[in-house]
Length: 198
Image (tube, rainbow, N blue to C red):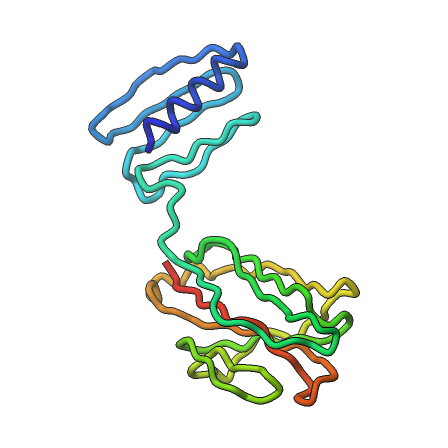
């Protein structure tokens, strides 16, 4: 994997007419330093702290495990339709690891409504009425919100994963969004999302 990324970086530098100098290297997982034009790359093969380095239009992910995400995000279930006929959708993207940032997006929601993200443990499909299912097995007394849905029916925001959560690696937290609506329940629900911290 590192060799293919290094080969790509070398090829890109050569195509741009830049010169490249390898001052030192080690195949046994030691250090390496590459420089050419405005790009300089250094790192240690297999190091947990190897970083993503870039210069110009080139980006190289260092370290044997660079670019891998050890956490996971799974969307599951389905929401229930709002009075508009649309079913709101909930997605979480990013890599759920301590110190990273997750992007939460709610789409096809009731414009101008307030929304609330429920948090809990375990996936479920428990009917609550009006065609809606609770997608969380055990709901926590904590939530995210309320926050407004835009006139376009969307809400999107970033949530950082605190760096001090390393002791919770492997913990799965389930999420589901309630969006205010004129349905008999007074709200509709999205699909669920389970995030496992890596």
